[in-house]
Length: 184
Image 1 (spheres, rainbow, N blue to C red):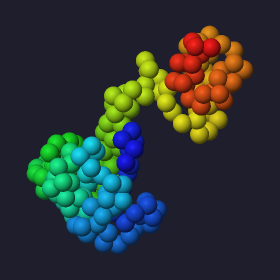
Image 2: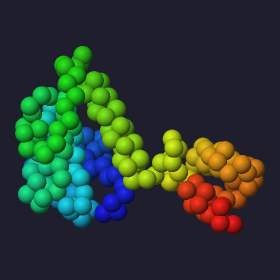
Image 3: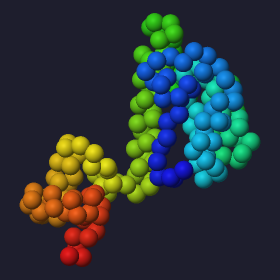
Image 4: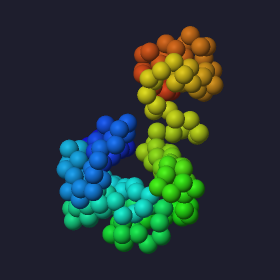
């Protein structure tokens, strides 16, 4: 695994994001199979996410990671869940019952997404992908991000838009452009 990335794995695979894969989350062995495709090791952190804290897929994956000496944590919305009992580190967001029973996307899913946003932001900062309050290692994958990167260079290096654009073409990201600009 490239240890500078976050990989999301869901019971049932990527198709399950768009269409339910029946009983996929009930398989206690499949999470480890899915994790193994990424060569997960002691260098990684595995965060099990389940609103109930009882999902067999997640529990099975965390148990196996613990057996392999892999750092484990969990994110759940029920206190003292089965998952929390086996994870090395626990984040519990107690949101209470859903307005619509069974619709965990409302409170639990929203709360978990907020926590995941915080975790991923802190990880990016700790990995050095942020300078000040700017993401300097973002992938320039659309016009909005290119424009943002150009603006960062304009402000930091006091260059024109054309010069910023040229620096991005040449160095492919903000960090490299800043580092190499001073050497030109």
